[in-house]
Length: 229
Ligand code: ADP
Ligand code: ADP
Image 1 (tube, protein in one colour):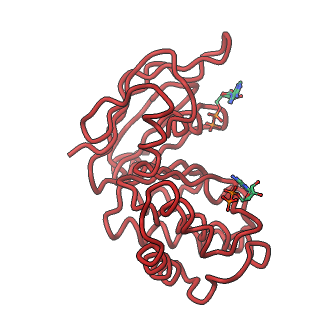
Image 2 (tube, protein in one colour):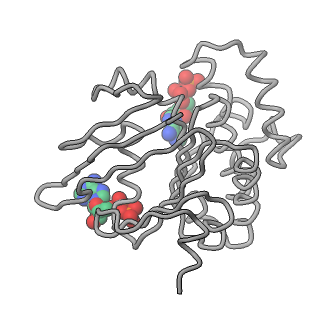
């Protein structure tokens, strides 16, 4: 079944074409990587799929249903289409646990006790057992990004959008974060990933989409994509 689908998306900023007739589909359990030069529109595409940018034309479907372009609809949908950003932006004055429970409790109306249990299991899974009561400033960038991943997973999204989540990290902690995503892929978490890490892209994905100047110029199964001369 298709979890997320984009049909013929086009996006302009003023006169500049950012995305030109972009279509893609992500099936349940699939991991799709988007690669392409800087400025090719990768981040804009992910932001559109999370309702953070308007579009001039095209349609988005979530679990087979067309997503109406209005903020109320997107507010309901965002927990289902979890996004993790390059800048992890944890609330600085909340603990790790509070950062991860606030949206499930306040936005989704779930019980704190239930969410806390889930968050504690997720923290353990990303190698941060025992960090629930720390403040973000006490953590390294790599640890904060892993908390940001837990914060998104705590909403139990149907699909994860990852936008260059290691780009702002010190090189020595990048692998700790990528390891978490590889584990999620192994568990068949549905993901759409923008990354510059080619080794990781090859390892993690089922399919690769190459975006250049707002156009999908190539799309192939990962093995085929990387095996060409
Ligand atoms: P990528 O993620 O592939 O590096 P982006 O989606 O960030 O590319 O950007 C695609 C293009 O859109 C770039 O030319 C960038 O300068 C432009 N762009 C991004 N955000 C804005 C904005 N808010 N206003 C105007 N232009 C923008
Ligand atoms: P509460 O509902 O408990 O008051 P808020 O959601 O209002 O918590 O936010 C708590 C603090 O986090 C505020 O100081 C707010 O400015 C800050 N904050 C809100 N959004 C962000 C964000 N995206 N990144 C970092 N800090 C944020």
